[in-house]
Structure formats: C-alpha cells, structure tokens
Image (cartoon, rainbow, N blue to C red):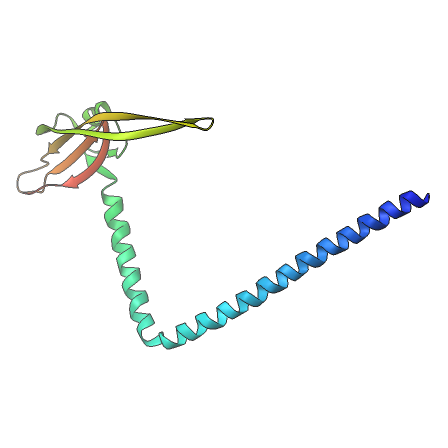
Length: 160
C-alpha cells in the first residue's frame, strides 16, 4: 500500500469515527432530555390521577358520539340505496328520485392560487349552492342535501 493511500484511509477512518461520536452524543443528549420529560409527565399524571379517570371517560364518550355523528352526516340511505358526500346531483337523483323541494341558496366564492416557479397566480372561483329537501315519511325529520357546484357537500336534518 502506498503512503498516500494509507493516509487517505486513515483520514476516512477518523472522519467516520468522529461522525459516529457526534451521532452517539446526540442520541445520548436526546435520551436525557426525553427522560426529563417523562419524569415531568409522570409528576403531572400523579397530581391529576383522581380527575384523570373522569376526563378519560368523558373524552371516550365524546369521541364515540362524535364518530357516530360524523359518520351519520357523510352518507344517507334513501330508497334502499346510499348517497355519499361527494356524489354529483345526477347520482343522487338516480338513487333517491326527485326531491320534495329544491332551493337556490346563493353562490360560494373561493380563491384559488397556484404557483409557476416563484410567481403566484390567483383566481376567484364561484359555484352555485343548492339545497334539496327529501321528506321520507310524514312526521319524520326531512333530510336536507346541500350541493356546492353540483357535488353533494353536506347532509343534515331539517325541522319537522
């Protein structure tokens, strides 16, 4: 082996060892900080233990109710078929038939931006909003389907 090649190997070896030392040091510092955080969190947990059970139960109940509620508003079963938020008006008409009433609710304007290189371009985009009401049976709450730009945006209950 030539002396120049041996020196190059030695320099590479020292660089790798130094890099590994820095990584090891960073991991040790990270571990020590994490250990301190865990100790603080355990102290907080111990201080809040009596109230923690009630909070956990309340959070669980609220999340279950929220999941049930949000799932119910993402879809609706009509005439044995299911329509989903995101369906277009023709799909809803084919599945549910003609609504009891249709109402134009105005326009919605949103601002769209896009970039080409470092330059940003923007444009206003206006879409119509329509509300369709379906009365399933007399005495039940009607379903109100809101469309933005021809797509089903929201499914909600109306008044009796």
